[in-house]
Image 1: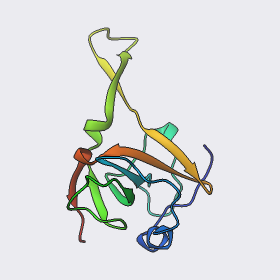
Image 2: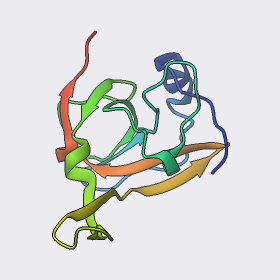
Image 3: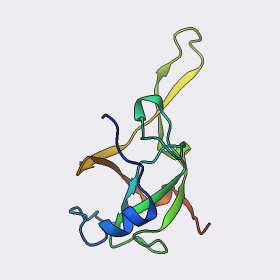
Image 4: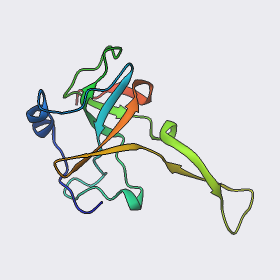
Length: 121
């Protein structure tokens, strides 16, 4: 995926009205920022912050607005990916996302139920 810019709330607000995709039903597009303040997202390292921004939302999504900073439940995004090679009883889980690349930035399409809370900090 390569290096990409960490999107701020100002960046997301600039995207409002220009984001080319409109999710259906209860889906939202969110940013994919990592945990580091200065770095780019590196999905291959499984570094994903639970704090993201909503970029677009479907018509059935209530309580969250485009541009809103939200906390996501990363555990709900994880799916089984097999078992540990050393311990056959230890399940390996990976984050599975429906990704889209717009102008060099990756966004994920998720259901609104993975949003735990609005982050007003």
